[in-house]
Length: 83
Image (tube, rainbow, N blue to C red; front, side):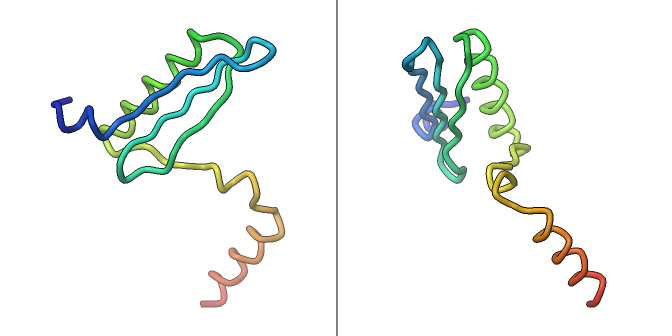
C-alpha cells in the first residue's frame, strides 16, 4: 500500500464500556464499517481482514441484510420470475 492509499484508509479501535472493543474502518469509495468485539486481538484480526478485502475490491457490505425481511425477499423473487 503506497502513501496515497494509506491516506484514504482510517482505522480506529475504541475500548467501550463493559470492556468491549469497537472497530471503525473508513476507506474512500466504501461504506464505513463498525463492529464490536470482546477482545482487541479479534478486533484487530477483523480489521486486517476487512482492509485486505477492500484493497482487493472483494469486500461486500451486508449491513442492509439485517433489515431485509423474508417478505421482501419473496416479493423480489416473485417479481424477477414475472419479468
